[in-house]
Image (tube, rainbow over all chains, first blue to last red; front, side):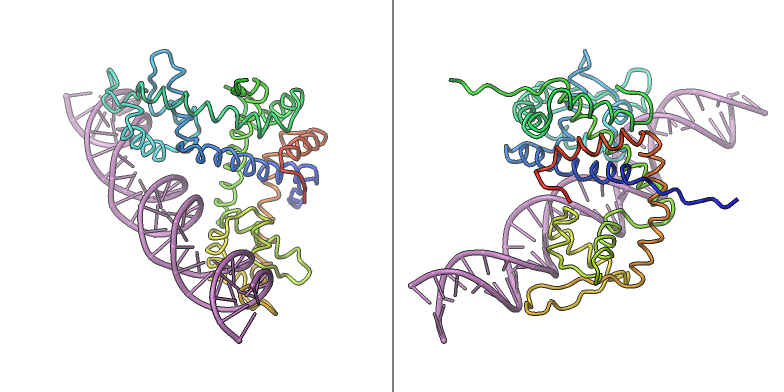
Length: 152
Length: 152
DNA sequence: TGAATATTCATGCAGATGCATGAAATTGTT
DNA sequence: AACAATTTCATGCATCTGCATGAATATTCA
């Protein structure tokens, strides 16, 4: 039996196309807001927020990679930039000299807070302003189904 | 009266975070499929498809920009690569020597077709496989609400 | 123990992207 | 007609990303 090429339905194709478009559109708007306010890219925010949420403000690069879905080499260089700007600090990992711990600094915490002051309202405008509360919940639920399996 | 900072609700924040995550995840999977099959990035596909859909296989760069949400300088260089590979051809725009027309070649059409042979099934797996038909429609409808106003 | 394997992080290089600017042509204004 | 403003596309430069690989340490297994 011939292996038929599996054509996606119109609804599925539509969902796919709009996932790309909407993401580009919304992310573009929000990043523009952030840049307009003189802030670094959202990737910086993601890392800072992840660190800030840990009780000790520390995490290994490996863990951050998984949390923010960043490539290893990519994160390595992002951490360089964050460290150069005094937002994080690399410290030794006790018991394994291959690894390291990244610790957020006071400046890092302060930047995260200041960024949220622009980021939060931008999300409100670009997402909250377009969807009702119920629709936002629906959207979140549907998008979750697209993920591999586990959530956060 | 003080201008209060507008905090997004949890549902809205959730929708935002998952929009980023799901898109990264799904696009990542599909682009990996394409790359695994030896194909160029999806941006190439978008341009080829747009051209192929026009009856004469032609469009101005300006028009393509709007259609695929690409920056001008970015598209300019993408067209360079497509032209180098013989997938499109730049021809004069009748009546305005500033502008140009981009025309898809036979090779371009052929590549688009071959890419669809991998792209379609990849969409089926990564989107169709995770959502029912009705869910896909819902998702498409919700994402559409995030866009500025008009559709395609 | 010792050698092979695996894990963690960094880096050189090529390619892609963003930003600012430039070049060429057209349109608008007086 | 002549000059300014606008539109369309290209490009130099810095930054960012992807890929391959390297260096250091840790783990596994014979």
